[in-house]
Structures are given as structure tokens and as C-alpha cells.
Image 1 (cartoon, rainbow, N blue to C red):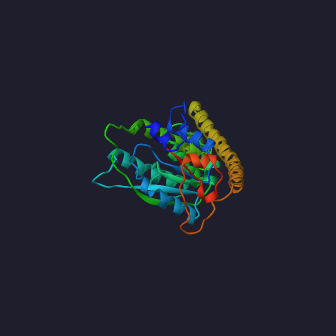
Image 2 (spheres, helix red, strand yellow):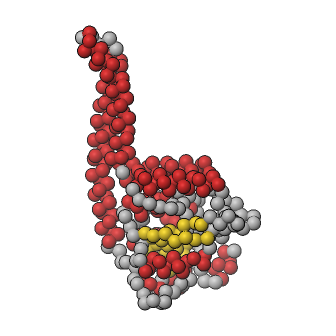
Image 3 (spheres, rainbow, N blue to C red):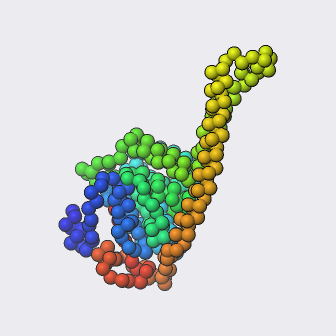
Length: 293
């Protein structure tokens, strides 16, 4: 298969570190283009939608176009557990980051150079889609969605996704991203839990002292005081990290603004070039498109 791809002019590179996230990280670092396309190589996404998605990115202009999978009951590749998990992650992420997304785990996306070169790409495996979505939400980048067809995998092809294993990885990543991107919410919830626990243990001790003037349960009193002290400490940590997050986000925003925007060509003048042409020839900005899978 690689030989056929090379024969038609594509550049194929090997990433030794396993995991989709590592491949995307390498591709985003090595490829220089104005428009980037990411599509899974399992032939479940309809490539015919690509011109429409690129045209949408340019005409917006947008920095991110998400291909939203349509559930075709005749040829769907959606497993019920994956569909339910995707819906749950969409709602959870949208609520946590105060934005809307319909299909955050889709592997079919089109990006601008500004998006790609401002994206840190920390994830190693399939949770990379979650990181891409949160990056778009946290920086409030111009984004839109395009419905796409989704079909069964070819015969002999098996999904590498594990419903529970990768699901827990995605949950772990969402938790880590909330801690980094919304520290006041993350540490605020923990602070509230510790404060409530402190009051539950401490109020009976205070009431008993008020009635008798004695504190017969010193261990409980010490535990309640320690929990309240820890709550105040974590609240301070959350406020401090929120200030650092704001400074980091401003720096990321300035770096994003320093990158060139996608040029808008004349109507009907959008071309798709092979990766070999993308890397070896200087062409007008709107004509250089990179494909990654």
C-alpha cells in the first residue's frame, strides 16, 4: 500500500513512537503548509467531502473545520457503545469549557496554519482529538462543523480503539485539561468538598463545646481544622494557577496572532495538491494543502 502511495507522489514518513497522537505531533511539526487535513486511514470517512471542508475553511475564514459523522443506518461504522460514549464526552466537554461541539472524537478535520502551529500536541494516543477540541475551545478559535458520511470499515480491518481503556484515557485527559485550563473550577470543586467535610466533622464539636465548654473529641476537632486549612490552601492554589493560566493563554493568543491567516482566493480557484508538490514547490498560499492521516 505504501508503494502505491509513494508512486502517485505522496511523501510517507514513519513515526517510531506508537500512537495516533505521536503521529499527529510529528506531522504538525514537520509539515509546512497553509491548510492541513487530518483523516483516519481506515477508509471509514468519505474523502469526497474534502473540497467542501476546505472551501468552508477558506470562505469563513475559519481555523478549524470539524467533520461531523452522520449515522447512516445502512452502512454505519458506529458501534452503539462508541456512539454513546462520544455523546457523553461531547456534553461533558462542552459544559466544562463552555462551548458546543457535536462530534469531538471525529478523525476528519481541516486546520489552518495558525491552528496547527499554535497547537502543543501533548497527547500520545487516540485522545489527541480531545486535545484538539479543547485547544479550539480554550483559545476560542473560529471553528465550524460540516456533516460527513461515515461507513463500515473494510473487510479484514479492525479498530484499535478499546471502549473502556481509551474511554478512561480520554476522561483522564479531560480532567488534566480542566486542571490546566480551568483551575478555579477544578480546585474550587475540591475546596468545596473539603470545606463541607470540615463542617460535617467540626460543627458537632463546636456545638458540644458551646453546650458544655469541653472538647472531648480532640481527634475529630483536629481533623475538621486540617480539612478547612487544606480547603483554604487549595483555594489559594486555584486562584494562583488561574492567574498563570490567563498569562499563558494571552501568550498563546499572541503567538497565534503572529501567524499568517489563510488567504482567500478568487471564487473557484481552490486547488488540492499532492504532498510532494506541497513540500517541493513554493506556490500561492491558498494553493498549498497538506494531507495527513
